[in-house]
Length: 337
Picture 1 (cartoon, rainbow, N blue to C red):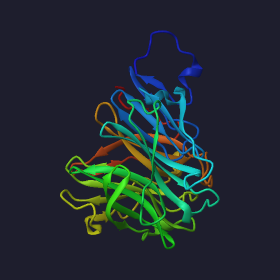
Picture 2: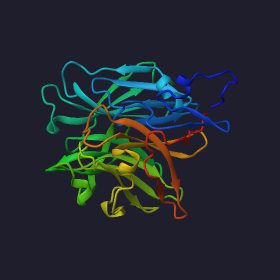
Picture 3: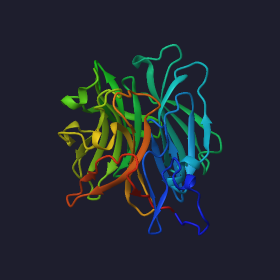
Picture 4: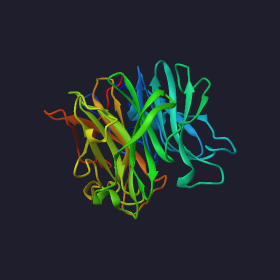
């Protein structure tokens, strides 16, 4: 971000988005906004698009400078019908650019049944260049083998895959399937991870949710996920890995890190970090966006705020996640297009 030579007021210098300036380079501090559970950021050309769970609608902010996200207008692009399978509890939106069109994946519950047995993942399509404009076409519910939440999609070696968090017995697990198109599965699902570690079973539930794909620089496949109940301070981000050349549909391809890669840090006043996404900045660097609480015992509410920080890579091509940056910690901002 280029700083104009005009004087800036103190209020602007310390606005909610945490913009500062050091040696002529844009910086910021977390959180990006006061509220924003399940945050998502994607860049298309010179524009970053941001979404988060709003509960009763789908809304997008767009900006070319993420340090000024708080100044970006929030545009509501879709509201649920009064009744039907996707009438309430609109969660975890993800915006993807696929084959020249925009696709919005989101979780919803059926009218009159706001429970795990009536949740699913739905898809909207927009052929326009700007997802805050144009018409969204309802592509319906993805026909998964189980009810579930938090769907995402990725391409590996020219094939598209879908990963989500289905309810299987008392557990929330991670399952993958191939896709025939952005809203249709092809073939059977494979469960690739279950909540079998102690840290994934906190808060009275056994949960793996919020899967997100991350391509390694040496061909490795990574999937992050959030473990434990979101109302627990011990909600955290774990990591699955598949070696280059592996079949993503084979459960044996995936190995789980023995501990979270991003967890609560009382020293920085970050609690229950989770439900992350990844995005590529304009300079090609990889960033993680996630939500967290600024204090203990704050549960799973709209007080969860969005944060971001860069992801590094070690010599073996493994992602390295720094400790969660707390409020007031100054970080170099993602490159502006």
